[in-house]
Length: 296
Ligand code: F3S
Image (cartoon, rainbow, N blue to C red; front, side, top):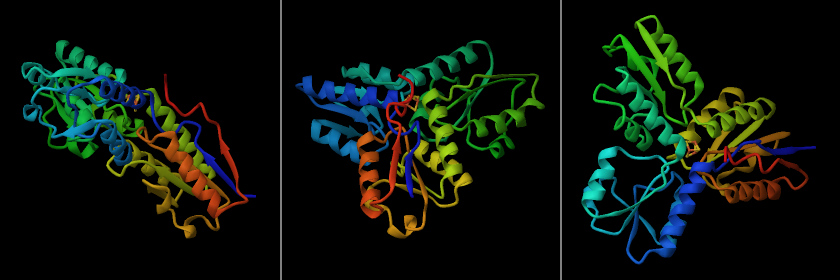
């Protein structure tokens, strides 16, 4: 008796669903081009569907835009990006996830209170770039405790975190800094959907002999999910599409766990389940749906 089990919290989150909904709604009503600065979400298949619905991507530099409507992604942007778009007469639809806006407000508050801000996150990631725009001119991105080695820290440090980071990294960075400064203020801005997704993936990975994590290879949160799972389950595979699964991965497994990143729609999880059931027709499926959509 083989079991295929989907993590309690897996797949698309509230912020991504909201952004997709806003983009589709805008495209339906628009009589001029609807664009996003870069892919709306880090999932190539969903982006392809959006293109068919009339939402196209443009370069991440708003100065290239002429008129039309710009949908701001769930990742958010720097304030100067909004300014440039407004100056160019572009209509804006703000799909910034409310939890990302919360990070922006937290960073600004720390700057106003005189802290040097550190953003724990992935350098170059659009969400982190957006947060930096709110974090003052002395802000730095910390992707690893090693990044602290060459940094001159002020005496008052404030920390915010990219919403999809792991608490382990935040804890490691905090532990490293605490003895070096007079004051350290940490605002844990990892979003609830991320915490739930990571916790339930880890819990499932512990009980599984194979873990399959579904999501774009360009999706940072999916990659981190796969890394976390591989710390508990050696046979963890990160896939974008069901047909990437090789029969040899699962043929001897008795418990197969499935998790999915924040930009993976439920339909992609369904496809993977269907594919696995074709390979293992006698397996029993466990999917407590309705718990997977993060906070709403
Ligand atoms: Fe928002 Fe968290 Fe999703 S910040 S976009 S709910 S992963």
